[in-house]
Length: 417
Ligand code: NAD
Image 1 (cartoon, rainbow, N blue to C red):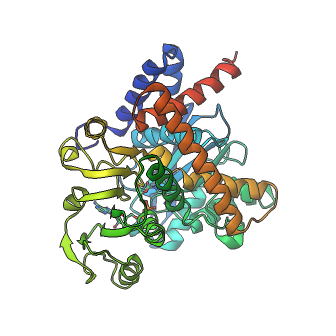
Image 2 (image 1 turned 120 degrees about the vertical axis):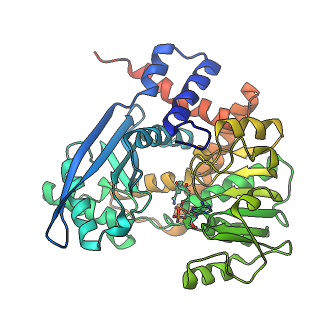
């Protein structure tokens, strides 16, 4: 449940209704788009290291396959619920459609506290979850990927379990694998690089200059840290950074590499001596040219949207802005690159990994970055053109483009039988 009392699933279904109305879609098709094709709940029993048996709940929700195989991450977290996973599966359908890659949307998860499980317990959990969902995943059916508290090792276990049942190695069943197991170059930084390409496009349209632009970034994980270094490389002045421990602020600029080295040693951004201390709330309200939420959902809400003082909001995180806040930002004239566009670089390079695996190829990092840039620039342009055509904001435009593409696919496929 979000801070303003709306669950992620309610936000997701309201978005379909809103865009359905704006596009004049058939009400019946909207009903189809609001429901996942399949939701599976499985029991995942494992023997703990102490010999006792525990049973965890595993979920896989497949939202739409109208444009291609289902695609989406698997998360291990105590808060995993069917409702949340369903909303995220729907979000994946729209993200893949905005990026114009031939995938539908899915999401999975296991309700557990991964911090309380040993490596061998996590391996048994992953292998059992894979076995229980074996019939619904597959290279042409549903391709899982890492998400919260799962990583390339988790993907290697899923791939191995699936391959053991098939009798031969099937790398294309998952993406986000280790490089030495047919993972893709450039996957680690793909989301942040895609975000940076979108920012470059937005800056051109807004007639701003990237060199010297002031940037505040919330969250210093894979997305936040890589975005900080890419923007720093392009001459931006990073004035604030934060993680869950708090943040730092310096109008003269912060070197993200120094902060990264400090974070590796201490696991904290807030203790680096590179500026004055600042809270996460204060960071979001700083006067800056570019604001990048790259931490968790629901950070810009009805409560603080009125205080946001940026020209450009680039959403690295998933669902960082509530619908109420989004309206306020539009009224304030803040240009937003919405999450389903801004962070779609990750799933785009996942798609590249799948293509490489299917063709038994290995592309260089330069090739991956070049293809990612082409894809992101095109996605940005498609959303921007939709915004102008329908005289709306970037968020509505991204959903209109995505939902319109999925609806078009459904209409041409027809309804069986
Ligand atoms: P991560 O776990 O690597 O990093 C998250 C960062 O956010 C950490 O620095 C953490 O300390 C910080 N954080 C956590 N709670 C916070 C809080 N309350 N206030 C401030 N900072 C907080 O995760 P990531 O992969 O960088 O993902 C970040 C966001 O981007 C998530 O919303 C994720 O869903 C989204 N995303 C990630 C990818 C990807 O490829 N990694 C792709 C698409 C979307």
